[in-house]
Image (cartoon, rainbow over all chains, first blue to last red; front, side, top):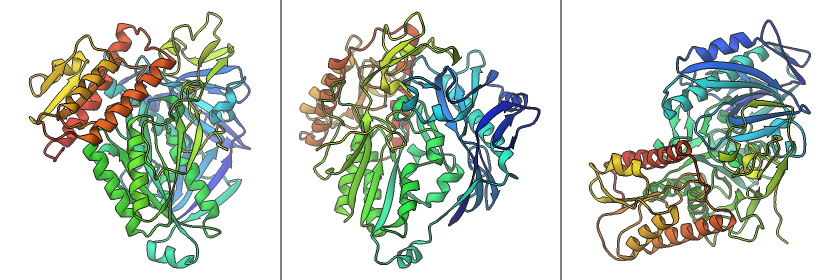
Length: 428
Length: 132
């Protein structure tokens, strides 16, 4: 499977009569986007606001972040099984508006979703302080159940992301990157002397506000499967996760998975990137056994010499992480884990909720318990009403002047457990 | 699924599950005490069926916890005991860092809903499967 990803660099966002890209500026017809979201009668009202790097703007609470993309050629359309027909994606050509994002915000439950600061000392902890953001502030219809609202907000974000992405269809990209993974026999034969490396991608799948979708399938209902890495770049995986802002994998992070990106960079140089094993993080221990058994089986069947495993979330996913680590090791692969840590504010407590002796190589994406200070901002997109009840916030977090003291886990993607961040920890 | 016991301090789980499942409801227990109740049952020979740290909401944020164990008793489930002891240790670590806030009724209702939904979808997805 071969995908050409055309990257159109966006350097500003402005309102406009039509949604289009000109000389790096994304113009957005806000009315068009509002009407698109309002097609769903579960949504009462929608407001579109812009947030640019360096502005004194705080966005909260954030649900999802979507990079606008469009299929230019090849089968399928963006986010298959969610907002478009089910059809295998990941080949042909796709254009991405790199540097622009659609951010859905608004309250879903009285806790959870996190913060993005566009400037100040906390901006550096989230990648979305450096992008030109089209913020979609959603209000649900009266009396809507949480399930329905989460779904409506999720689909609105994807629809708007895809709509804005269409603006890039006819634009000449600034850069075109080609990614290719061949069927297993050919791929193995192409670089016979290089170690075969796979990526085990664990999807959050525990229930309401903890879900992820693969071609529209709720990940808790699937058994582990094989995915060509380029499928993810066309939106085969979408996020329904609103839990623990710091390490939730937004749809943006699926589209731009850094493990896949880096494995491709080294593909054919010092490793042979065979593909992605997708698995889930379910609640029943029997499901964990079943899924990790199947992961081990894939590692053996594909003849992988090495695997990288990432997880999403804290607590019971640590058990899946360790089961996958052990069974991949038993199947003959060397294993590297990537995750964030919750070792307490002083960093001295146990980082993960589970461990096995095979887990001897781990890349840390930082400590979610660290306290940070947020200065007041001139403009709030969304609301600060819920700061003290967001995860990472606490009583007294929000001061009358709008400044905040909270754990770093309140910031979107600050310790994201696939490495799309700047924090880490080193052991000497 | 008649072969399970649902240990919970979540009244929504108690209300919705009691007609279908055996529910051991500890109305006044904290999240930590609920885990300890489940742990004590594991010591008495019940098997742990769901991960005690279900959900990614941290154990010093949500006050509610539901854990599913087997109705049958047998030899001690040492693997399950390990999971629940590690989960209790992890919970104490979080609580030592910061106590669970005193939430408004609205937020409590959201936490109850999340805990209930996680367990109900999990039980539903296991229907007809071997769960031991």
